[in-house]
Length: 89
Ligand SMILES: [Zn+2]
Ligand SMILES: [Zn+2]
Image 1 (cartoon, helix red, strand yellow):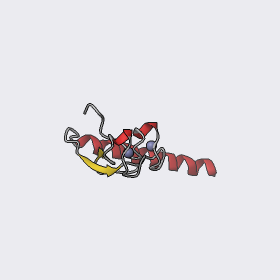
Image 2 (tube, rainbow, N blue to C red; image 1 turned 180 degrees about the horizontal axis):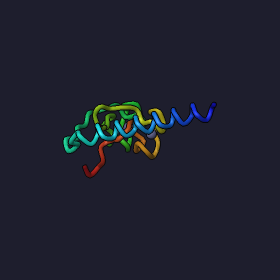
Image 3 (spheres, rainbow, N blue to C red; image 1 turned 120 degrees about the vertical axis):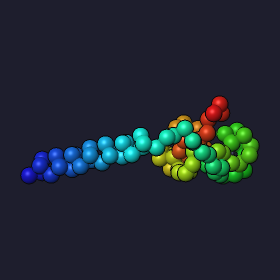
């Protein structure tokens, strides 16, 4: 009984993922836009991670880093935001 339910759920999840990735592929992602966000490390006061500006450029639409929920970690470059603009972009 439980196994059947789990299999169904897994199938649905797989379908959802496939549909979503197909949708993403149709969108040309050469036009990457960035928007300023308050640095999550210093809260806008300025630190080495935001170049003492208090703000960082992150990929739009900006969203908090899912690894640290905005506190700052290695995945977000200590900005607290997902996909911060790279130094060499
Ligand atoms: Zn900062
Ligand atoms: Zn993070």
